[in-house]
Length: 171
Image 1 (cartoon, rainbow, N blue to C red):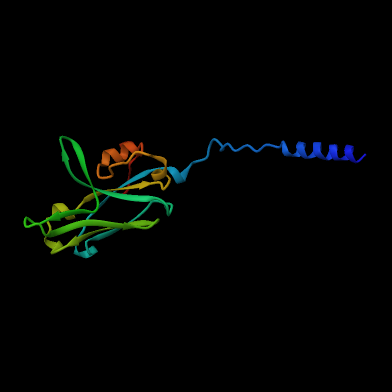
Image 2: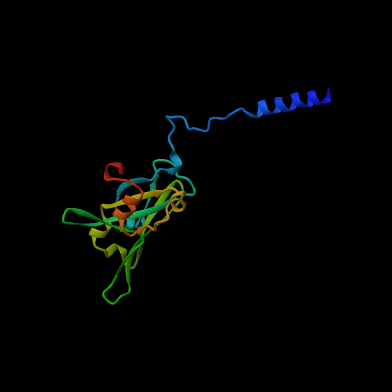
């Protein structure tokens, strides 16, 4: 009798163990933590804003995300030339004239000019500067075995699979 009871208990345990769980994501979910984004802003630097600007992100990013900032430095043969910040300009004697730099939180980015006599830096470098903030998900560094040249804006965009139609221009 004990053996039959033990057999039934064993079969009962096996039946309970056969339950399954469906691990598939629902079709309409959005994977917000692994999406690269690019936001474009136009800002000016002057004495009134202490040669800095605080750009609030359209939404909070994850604390593991990486942020890159590029500045439109010119156009060559109809192609935009983007330079990665920090970007430094020197006097002819090799000493620092001024530079652009930034820091960021998961809520915003502070972009600023640093240097000597910033009020006399050409307006071409201070007014109506077009800036692109590229948000790179934290997982991206672990996902790819290829190194990306972040100094090359186009290489960065290709690696992140972002095209110009994905750039969100914010006023």
